[in-house]
Each structure stands twice: as C-alpha cells, then as structure tokens.
Length: 78
Image (cartoon, rainbow, N blue to C red; front, side):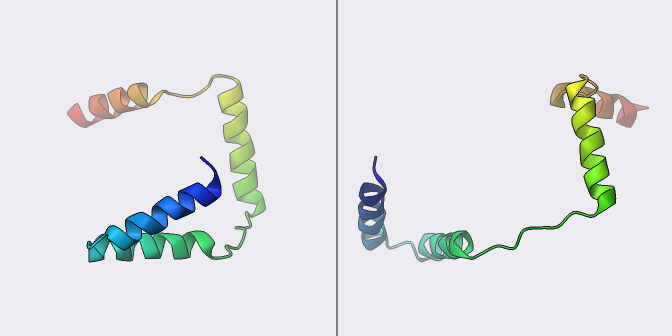
C-alpha cells in the first residue's frame, strides 16, 4: 500500500471514530513521531560496555530469554 493510500485510510478512520481516548492517544503518538529527536550521546564507558556486549554475543557468550528466566527462577527458589 502506498503512503498516500495509508494516509487516506487513516483520515477516514479518524473521521469515523468517536473514541476520544483513542484519538488523543493517536494524536500524541503522531506528535512524538514527528518531533525532531536529539541523538543520544554515549560516553566512553557506555561505548566500551556496548562493544564488550557485542563481542560476547559474537562469541556466543549469552543466555537466551528462556535460560535467563530459568536461572532467575532457580535463584528465587533458593
């Protein structure tokens, strides 16, 4: 679907909607999406931590979500 078609469909749905809360949330979302956001600057320590984490992932040194949850469950049951 082309952008112009999506816009037309959204406008139509907005015009049909009587749900004030939904319209307010959609308006808020669009405003956030359209704001110019500043790029977050990382310090040297943060960059180093990210580089280390990427290296660990590359080497397979990580837990899956399931493994992590299992370890947490075991730790909480002790």
